[in-house]
Length: 405
Image (tube, rainbow, N blue to C red):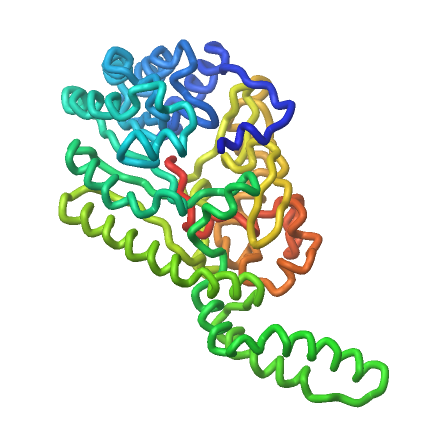
C-alpha cells in the first residue's frame, strides 16, 4: 500500500518549472547530489526529461543526478530520452523478479511492462555510462524471492540492489514486517530471564507502593533493579512486550537473515553493490541518512522538509502501537532561498541534535514505556529528551529501511 493513500485531503500536483529552475539556479556550486523523486512516480511529470536536462546544464558534470521509478513509464523511448538528458543513476522499485508476485504486491503493475522496461533500460545504460539498479521492499510475502531478484540483477548486469524493510502505514502491512525494532541485545537479555521480566516488573511496582504506604518491602523492587542493571551496563534497556514479540517470531527472523545473507553472497560473487537492512535494530548504532548526507527535501510546492518521512502527515504502525507522524516544515523556496532556510536557527538546531542520534534522540523499541500508552509515542511532536520533533521510532535511523539519497 502506498503511503499517499493515507494522506486524506492532501492535494497532488506537479512542481512548476520556474520554481524548479529557481532551486537549481540557487544550487550552482553548492550541491553534489540531487535526487529527482519524492512520493509518487517522477516520470508522471510531463517535463521530467527537461528537469534532468536543465539540472545537468546548469550544475555541470560534477553533480550526481538520480531518481527512483516504479518502471511503469520507463519505456525504451523515454529511457533513452532521460539517459541522453544526463541522468547518472536510475533505481527501479521492484519487489519480485516475476510478474505474478509483483502484480500482487504492486496492484496494477500487470498492466505495464515493468520487467521488460528494466531489461531494455539495462541494455541502454551502457551507451550513456549511467548506473541502473533495483530498490526493493522486503516483506513476509516476498523475502524468499530476494536471492532470485539479485540473480536477476546479475543477469541484467545491473550496478546495485538496495533492500529496505516495509514501513507499515496501515494495519494490513503490520503482518508483512519481517524485522523487530528491538535491539538484539535486548531480545537476548529478555530470553535469558526466562520470561521473568514481565512478572518481576509488576511485582516491583507493587513493592514500591507497599514501601511507600507501609514502609515495608517484599524485596521485589531490588531484585528487578539488580536484574535490569545487567542490560543497563551495556547501554541498553528492554521493552518486554516488543522483546517477547521478537522471540515469538524468532524463527522467521532467523529465516530472513539467511535469505539476506544468500542475497549478499550472490551480489558479492558478481561484484554488484548491495545495501541490506538488519533484522534487529540497535539503539546504540543509529544515524539519520539525511543528516549524514547533509540532505534536505523540497516538495512540489516549494516547502522544505528535513526528510521524506516528515514530508506529509500520515499514520504509522510500529512498536505494537499506532501513531501520527506530523509534517515538519522549515520554509518555502518560493519565498526564500534554500540557503536561507538551511541556515535558519531552528533547522540548524534540528540537524545538530541528530548528529549523534543514539545520544541525542531516544529509541522506543527498547523503552519499557513504549507499549504502555506513553504520551511521546502518540505522535512525533516531541520526545522524552525534550526534542520538539520526535525521531524516536524512525526505522530509517535504525538501518531497517534505506533512503536512496
